[in-house]
Length: 185
Image 1 (cartoon, rainbow, N blue to C red):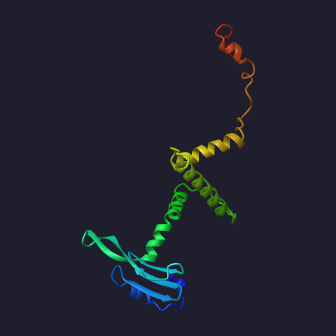
Image 2: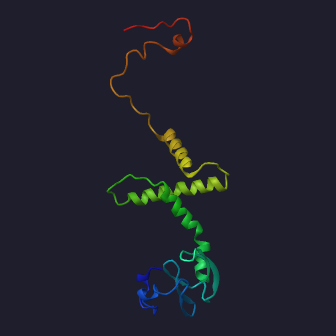
Image 3: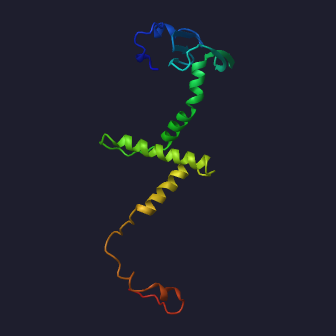
């Protein structure tokens, strides 16, 4: 949860909580609801009505000062969140890799672009995992774009006046090796 969404929760003030050492926890429980604030690299707050009993698990974290790993106690609610949110974080990461840089003043453009990129990433994940595809995300996006352009795109028009020589000689005499003679103009 964001800190501004914790209105009347009697946690310690944020400035005071950030001074505590890494691994410090505050817990509030009321009936089916559990609120946890934990200090890791930054302060994180969680609220849950699924996990209503507070338990802790040991986790390994890198300590910069000692240049070694420390073992901290992490609340179970945070561990459960990290286990279940891996796919969403991976999806958001993949969508952000190759986003389009087309700028528009229309309010709906970012929504449309995100929806399109999300559909391409979901298709790529399906292709990679289910169909055992060998494309990376950029290669897959290129194949999708080329396929759509081939099916629905229009051929580019030539610039300038059409050449009079292009229709003068057909392909049959050009490639038979006998009757084609170059014409100097």
